[in-house]
Amino acid sequence: MPIHITALTDPDRGENDYRLAWLASDDTGVPVGSAFLRVFTRAGQDHLAELELHVHPAERRNGAGSRLLEAVAAAAREHGRRSVVAQTGAGSPGDHFLRARGLRKVLTLTYARLPMAAVDPEALATLAGRPHPGYRLESWEGTVPDSLAQTFAASRRAMDDMPMDDTDYGTVAWDVDRVRAVAQAVAQRGDLLHTVAAVDESDGSIAGFTELVVPGGGQGDGQHYGTGVLPEHRGHGLARWMKAQSILRTRERHPDLGGLLADTADSNTYMRSINDGLGYEPTHRSIDYQLDL
Image (cartoon, rainbow, N blue to C red; front, side, top):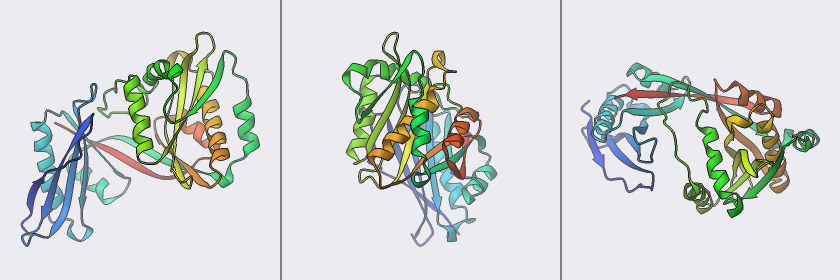
Protein backbone atom coordinates (compact mmCIF):
# COMPACT_ATOMS: atom_id res chain seq x y z
CA MET A 1 0.00 0.00 0.00
CA PRO A 2 1.51 3.36 -1.01
CA ILE A 3 2.23 5.63 1.97
CA HIS A 4 2.29 9.40 1.59
CA ILE A 5 4.21 11.58 4.05
CA THR A 6 3.11 15.19 4.52
CA ALA A 7 5.12 17.69 6.54
CA LEU A 8 2.86 19.82 8.73
CA THR A 9 3.20 23.26 10.25
CA ASP A 10 3.37 22.96 14.03
CA PRO A 11 2.79 26.09 16.14
CA ASP A 12 4.26 24.46 19.24
CA ARG A 13 7.34 26.65 19.67
CA GLY A 14 8.81 27.47 23.07
CA GLU A 15 11.71 29.42 24.46
CA ASN A 16 13.97 26.34 24.50
CA ASP A 17 12.61 24.18 21.67
CA TYR A 18 10.39 23.91 18.63
CA ARG A 19 8.52 21.01 17.07
CA LEU A 20 8.28 19.52 13.58
CA ALA A 21 5.41 17.27 12.53
CA TRP A 22 4.49 14.80 9.78
CA LEU A 23 1.34 12.93 8.80
CA ALA A 24 1.35 9.53 7.08
CA SER A 25 -1.69 8.68 4.96
CA ASP A 26 -2.70 5.89 2.59
CA ASP A 27 -3.45 6.33 -1.11
CA THR A 28 -7.04 7.37 -0.31
CA GLY A 29 -5.87 10.17 1.97
CA VAL A 30 -6.83 8.42 5.21
CA PRO A 31 -4.34 9.20 8.03
CA VAL A 32 -2.54 6.12 9.32
CA GLY A 33 0.22 7.59 11.49
CA SER A 34 2.06 10.67 12.68
CA ALA A 35 5.46 11.74 13.93
CA PHE A 36 6.66 14.70 15.97
CA LEU A 37 10.24 15.82 16.46
CA ARG A 38 10.98 18.19 19.32
CA VAL A 39 14.18 20.08 18.53
CA PHE A 40 15.96 21.47 21.57
CA THR A 41 17.64 24.85 21.27
CA ARG A 42 18.79 25.50 24.85
CA ALA A 43 22.52 25.62 25.54
CA GLY A 44 23.96 22.20 26.32
CA GLN A 45 21.26 20.33 24.40
CA ASP A 46 21.29 22.00 21.00
CA HIS A 47 22.58 18.75 19.49
CA LEU A 48 19.50 16.78 20.53
CA ALA A 49 15.95 16.09 19.34
CA GLU A 50 13.17 13.92 20.74
CA LEU A 51 10.94 11.69 18.62
CA GLU A 52 7.31 10.73 19.14
CA LEU A 53 5.95 8.35 16.49
CA HIS A 54 2.55 6.66 16.27
CA VAL A 55 0.97 4.31 13.73
CA HIS A 56 -2.61 3.08 14.04
CA PRO A 57 -2.54 -0.57 15.19
CA ALA A 58 -4.54 -1.70 12.14
CA GLU A 59 -2.03 -0.02 9.80
CA ARG A 60 1.21 -1.38 11.23
CA ARG A 61 3.65 -3.43 9.13
CA ASN A 62 2.64 -1.51 6.00
CA GLY A 63 5.68 0.77 5.95
CA ALA A 64 4.14 3.88 7.51
CA GLY A 65 6.41 3.82 10.55
CA SER A 66 9.54 3.35 8.46
CA ARG A 67 8.59 6.19 6.11
CA LEU A 68 7.90 8.50 9.04
CA LEU A 69 11.23 7.60 10.65
CA GLU A 70 13.04 8.34 7.37
CA ALA A 71 11.42 11.78 7.22
CA VAL A 72 12.33 12.48 10.85
CA ALA A 73 15.96 11.42 10.39
CA ALA A 74 16.36 13.60 7.29
CA ALA A 75 14.87 16.61 9.06
CA ALA A 76 17.02 16.06 12.15
CA ARG A 77 20.14 16.14 9.98
CA GLU A 78 18.93 19.29 8.21
CA HIS A 79 18.42 20.95 11.59
CA GLY A 80 21.94 20.10 12.72
CA ARG A 81 21.11 17.37 15.24
CA ARG A 82 23.54 14.57 16.03
CA SER A 83 21.16 12.50 18.21
CA VAL A 84 17.45 11.69 18.25
CA VAL A 85 15.98 9.95 21.30
CA ALA A 86 12.65 8.14 21.59
CA GLN A 87 10.97 6.51 24.58
CA THR A 88 8.66 3.51 24.44
CA GLY A 89 7.22 0.90 26.78
CA ALA A 90 9.33 -2.18 27.39
CA GLY A 91 8.03 -5.04 25.27
CA SER A 92 5.63 -2.80 23.33
CA PRO A 93 5.24 -2.65 19.53
CA GLY A 94 7.29 0.55 19.65
CA ASP A 95 10.08 -1.28 21.46
CA HIS A 96 10.25 -3.93 18.72
CA PHE A 97 9.96 -1.33 15.93
CA LEU A 98 12.76 0.94 17.14
CA ARG A 99 15.10 -1.97 17.78
CA ALA A 100 14.37 -3.45 14.35
CA ARG A 101 15.12 -0.09 12.69
CA GLY A 102 18.60 -0.01 14.18
CA LEU A 103 18.13 2.50 16.97
CA ARG A 104 20.39 1.94 19.94
CA LYS A 105 19.02 1.10 23.39
CA VAL A 106 20.56 3.66 25.75
CA LEU A 107 18.50 3.78 28.95
CA THR A 108 15.94 1.72 30.88
CA LEU A 109 13.60 3.40 33.36
CA THR A 110 11.50 1.79 36.07
CA TYR A 111 8.27 3.56 36.98
CA ALA A 112 6.92 3.23 40.51
CA ARG A 113 3.94 4.47 42.52
CA LEU A 114 3.54 5.18 46.21
CA PRO A 115 -0.13 4.65 47.20
CA MET A 116 -0.94 7.39 49.70
CA ALA A 117 -3.28 5.03 51.57
CA ALA A 118 -0.28 2.81 52.32
CA VAL A 119 1.91 5.60 53.74
CA ASP A 120 2.92 5.23 57.38
CA PRO A 121 2.89 8.85 58.66
CA GLU A 122 4.70 7.99 61.89
CA ALA A 123 7.56 6.32 60.05
CA LEU A 124 7.79 9.28 57.66
CA ALA A 125 7.76 11.75 60.52
CA THR A 126 10.61 9.83 62.15
CA LEU A 127 12.66 10.00 58.95
CA ALA A 128 11.85 13.66 58.31
CA GLY A 129 12.57 14.62 61.91
CA ARG A 130 15.91 12.85 62.16
CA PRO A 131 18.72 15.40 62.73
CA HIS A 132 21.31 15.89 60.01
CA PRO A 133 24.06 17.94 61.69
CA GLY A 134 25.06 20.95 59.62
CA TYR A 135 21.88 20.95 57.53
CA ARG A 136 18.29 22.14 57.81
CA LEU A 137 15.26 21.67 55.59
CA GLU A 138 13.48 24.51 53.78
CA SER A 139 10.32 24.15 51.70
CA TRP A 140 8.16 26.29 49.46
CA GLU A 141 5.23 26.17 47.08
CA GLY A 142 5.50 27.43 43.50
CA THR A 143 8.35 29.80 42.67
CA VAL A 144 11.47 29.74 44.84
CA PRO A 145 11.66 32.66 47.31
CA ASP A 146 13.94 35.48 46.22
CA SER A 147 16.25 34.85 49.19
CA LEU A 148 17.03 31.33 47.91
CA ALA A 149 16.75 31.90 44.16
CA GLN A 150 20.46 32.21 43.36
CA THR A 151 21.59 29.24 45.43
CA PHE A 152 18.68 27.11 44.18
CA ALA A 153 19.64 27.79 40.57
CA ALA A 154 23.26 26.92 41.40
CA SER A 155 22.17 23.67 43.07
CA ARG A 156 20.59 22.41 39.83
CA ARG A 157 24.02 21.11 38.76
CA ALA A 158 23.28 18.26 41.18
CA MET A 159 21.37 16.69 38.27
CA ASP A 160 24.25 16.98 35.79
CA ASP A 161 25.63 13.55 36.64
CA MET A 162 22.35 11.72 37.16
CA PRO A 163 22.57 8.26 35.56
CA MET A 164 21.59 8.52 31.89
CA ASP A 165 23.65 5.51 30.78
CA ASP A 166 24.52 5.85 27.08
CA THR A 167 22.06 8.66 26.27
CA ASP A 168 23.60 11.66 24.50
CA TYR A 169 21.58 13.88 26.82
CA GLY A 170 23.97 16.78 27.22
CA THR A 171 23.65 19.23 30.11
CA VAL A 172 21.02 21.84 30.91
CA ALA A 173 22.25 25.29 31.91
CA TRP A 174 20.25 26.74 34.79
CA ASP A 175 19.89 30.29 36.04
CA VAL A 176 17.29 32.09 38.14
CA ASP A 177 15.18 32.98 35.11
CA ARG A 178 14.98 29.35 34.02
CA VAL A 179 14.10 28.15 37.53
CA ARG A 180 11.29 30.69 37.70
CA ALA A 181 10.10 29.85 34.18
CA VAL A 182 9.67 26.18 35.11
CA ALA A 183 7.61 27.08 38.17
CA GLN A 184 5.52 29.47 36.09
CA ALA A 185 4.86 26.80 33.44
CA VAL A 186 3.61 24.39 36.13
CA ALA A 187 1.32 27.08 37.57
CA GLN A 188 -0.04 28.09 34.16
CA ARG A 189 -1.32 24.60 33.49
CA GLY A 190 -3.05 24.61 36.87
CA ASP A 191 -0.75 22.30 38.82
CA LEU A 192 1.08 22.85 42.10
CA LEU A 193 4.87 22.67 42.48
CA HIS A 194 6.23 21.65 45.91
CA THR A 195 9.95 21.87 46.68
CA VAL A 196 11.94 20.71 49.69
CA ALA A 197 15.60 21.69 49.94
CA ALA A 198 18.46 20.81 52.27
CA VAL A 199 20.40 23.92 53.27
CA ASP A 200 24.03 23.94 54.38
CA GLU A 201 23.90 25.87 57.64
CA SER A 202 27.53 26.97 57.34
CA ASP A 203 26.80 29.36 54.49
CA GLY A 204 23.05 29.16 53.73
CA SER A 205 23.56 27.49 50.35
CA ILE A 206 21.28 24.75 49.04
CA ALA A 207 22.95 21.34 49.11
CA GLY A 208 20.12 19.38 47.52
CA PHE A 209 16.46 19.49 46.56
CA THR A 210 13.46 17.38 45.64
CA GLU A 211 10.51 18.59 43.55
CA LEU A 212 6.99 17.23 43.37
CA VAL A 213 4.06 18.34 41.19
CA VAL A 214 0.48 17.81 42.36
CA PRO A 215 -2.64 18.16 40.15
CA GLY A 216 -4.39 21.46 40.80
CA GLY A 217 -7.50 19.75 42.15
CA GLY A 218 -5.49 17.79 44.70
CA GLN A 219 -6.74 14.46 43.35
CA GLY A 220 -5.25 11.73 41.19
CA ASP A 221 -1.49 11.15 41.35
CA GLY A 222 1.37 13.55 41.94
CA GLN A 223 4.61 13.32 39.99
CA HIS A 224 8.17 13.58 41.29
CA TYR A 225 10.17 15.91 39.04
CA GLY A 226 13.62 15.23 40.38
CA THR A 227 15.79 14.74 43.43
CA GLY A 228 19.42 15.80 43.48
CA VAL A 229 22.24 16.36 45.98
CA LEU A 230 25.41 18.23 45.09
CA PRO A 231 28.45 15.93 44.92
CA GLU A 232 30.21 17.65 47.83
CA HIS A 233 27.21 16.98 50.10
CA ARG A 234 26.54 13.35 49.27
CA GLY A 235 26.86 10.56 51.80
CA HIS A 236 24.79 12.26 54.53
CA GLY A 237 21.37 10.76 53.71
CA LEU A 238 19.99 14.07 52.45
CA ALA A 239 17.99 12.59 49.55
CA ARG A 240 15.97 10.23 51.78
CA TRP A 241 15.51 13.01 54.35
CA MET A 242 14.17 15.49 51.79
CA LYS A 243 11.95 12.96 50.09
CA ALA A 244 10.40 11.82 53.37
CA GLN A 245 9.60 15.43 54.25
CA SER A 246 8.16 16.02 50.78
CA ILE A 247 5.85 13.01 51.01
CA LEU A 248 4.76 13.97 54.53
CA ARG A 249 3.95 17.55 53.53
CA THR A 250 2.09 16.41 50.44
CA ARG A 251 0.01 13.94 52.43
CA GLU A 252 -0.95 16.64 54.93
CA ARG A 253 -1.80 19.28 52.32
CA HIS A 254 -3.55 17.02 49.80
CA PRO A 255 -5.45 14.32 51.70
CA ASP A 256 -7.42 13.31 48.59
CA LEU A 257 -4.32 12.54 46.52
CA GLY A 258 -4.22 8.92 45.33
CA GLY A 259 -0.51 8.36 44.97
CA LEU A 260 2.90 9.66 43.94
CA LEU A 261 4.69 8.62 40.74
CA ALA A 262 8.42 8.34 40.18
CA ASP A 263 10.62 7.17 37.31
CA THR A 264 14.21 6.15 37.90
CA ALA A 265 16.98 4.81 35.69
CA ASP A 266 17.63 1.14 36.41
CA SER A 267 21.29 2.03 36.87
CA ASN A 268 20.42 4.57 39.59
CA THR A 269 20.49 1.95 42.32
CA TYR A 270 20.81 4.54 45.11
CA MET A 271 17.56 6.36 44.30
CA ARG A 272 15.76 3.12 43.56
CA SER A 273 16.72 1.81 47.02
CA ILE A 274 15.34 5.01 48.58
CA ASN A 275 12.06 4.64 46.70
CA ASP A 276 11.81 0.96 47.65
CA GLY A 277 12.40 1.79 51.30
CA LEU A 278 9.70 4.48 51.22
CA GLY A 279 7.14 2.03 49.83
CA TYR A 280 7.10 2.80 46.11
CA GLU A 281 5.80 -0.13 44.07
CA PRO A 282 7.11 -0.74 40.51
CA THR A 283 4.38 -0.46 37.87
CA HIS A 284 6.11 -0.73 34.48
CA ARG A 285 9.33 -0.04 32.56
CA SER A 286 10.24 2.02 29.54
CA ILE A 287 13.24 2.05 27.22
CA ASP A 288 14.98 5.00 25.61
CA TYR A 289 16.37 4.42 22.13
CA GLN A 290 18.76 6.71 20.29
CA LEU A 291 19.32 7.35 16.61
CA ASP A 292 22.91 8.47 16.03
CA LEU A 293 23.20 10.77 13.02
